Image (cartoon, rainbow, N blue to C red; front, side, top):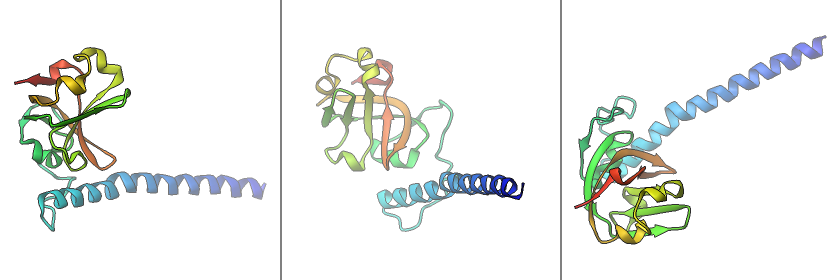
Length: 158
């Protein structure tokens, strides 16, 4: 009977530790990493504000017009931005449209293959070299800033 009580306590302690690790990463570590990246992009040694109280975040669909170079400051915000697509790549699963050849450090527009039918054939060729207006929510994925396009209504050729 004492063995059973030991294992029950072990399960509860293990579950508690896992919860602390999961939420600690979600609420503490990820915001700190996001702030340090934002500081690196803006050139500031100290972030202007904590990501938990960042007033630039806009979870509604209220559009904020921004320069695409400032996208890292608006993660989770619904934005409108304009720029020329200077590079693109389609691997058959995902199509990437970039405002800068240094795509790793700037916002990337992403189209998943499940949405290809909503766009012109070969979107990587169609949009390349064209000035576009993009509307969507800025997300961070694996340390990179992106806007996922769901359809033609998200991107307009100017």
